[in-house]
Length: 174
Ligand code: GDP
Image (cartoon, rainbow, N blue to C red):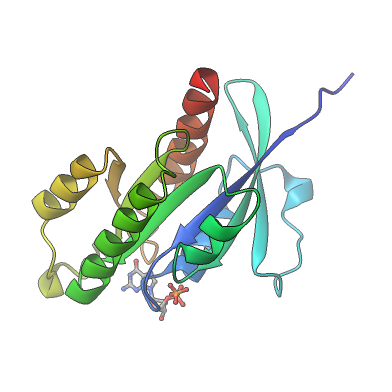
């Protein structure tokens, strides 16, 4: 008999152009997804990915949003916040910092994980935000940090697994 599948809502926050849409699409092609879940409504702004991790299945609903505000204002806020910037766009990094500050102000980070993601590391010669700066920002807000490239599919599966792991860890404590 199948146990009910845990569903988690994940807010993908970041400036326009940082790669949120690309990242969510890439998540949906990852190998830890069940085949039956690969077909979905591509027009929907909420997109579902099903993951089998440590023998347990979970569903993640990814919501694409430029700012955290809408998600904070919901009667039921999301289960995790993924704040994305582009390593070739300094302004997107500043925006990420503002969004993390807002999440902290609204007391969203105590019971819910936050992950800071630097995307587009394939564009190494145009890099405007160092790995160290990313790490420091994440550390300030007690967020997990990872650099990825959706373009060359680097660290995308690691990020997906990291999101689910962080959600499961926090759920144990709250
Ligand atoms: P969104 O506005 O945050 O949803 O950003 P999109 O997903 O629409 O991506 C914006 C642009 O950046 C698109 O042209 C993507 O193809 C490109 N892009 C996304 N990720 C990467 C990456 O890792 N490397 C490179 N070189 N381009 C990327």
